[in-house]
Image (cartoon, rainbow, N blue to C red; front, side):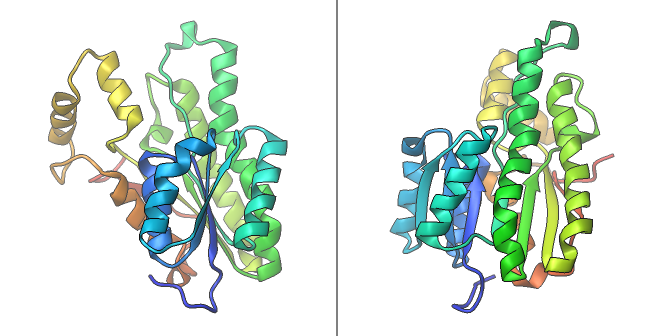
Length: 255
């Protein structure tokens, strides 16, 4: 949906240097939003920002560790100053290393929960005052089908399940301010994470992708753009009566 000059026009997308985050950032820019592109390394965001600007959009790359409170606050403040107060937030940054429970270090648990769960809390808390002041806002947070259980990644599954509770609680608390909060739960999507999974299993990615597609009702794996289109709707003015929902973008039903 295209925004008019009277609509809120600044979005923030975390973890937007590549993959799903980059696709979401490009989609929102195409919808008419200025986009603050946050990732660990500002230089890594160059491709996303250049693509947006090349298409006539407005974007700003900002480096921040989403688990670092001061870094997140500074990143949001810079985006607000240079692009305008953000009223759309897509919490996308995440990591998902694999380890059996008995082999998982406390450091890995804390890192995964820090980026995947603490990060969305910090970003949302920093952006929320701008939304409340505007009387309008859209929060979209990336959960995962792993939220229903992930035998290979109890840390990741726990964080992604926590994001569903986080999203529903935000919807209940912030609705009176004109702010919606929803989660997207992707299934198998072509990404660095799924490529890493193929390597761990000793499979070529094409073979891994074909095997995954056989179990997906629509007969294919997801692309980052599939998630971006869903985010585009959820942050649009037309989605104002959709809040507290988890949208599974997985090519079929999820138990």
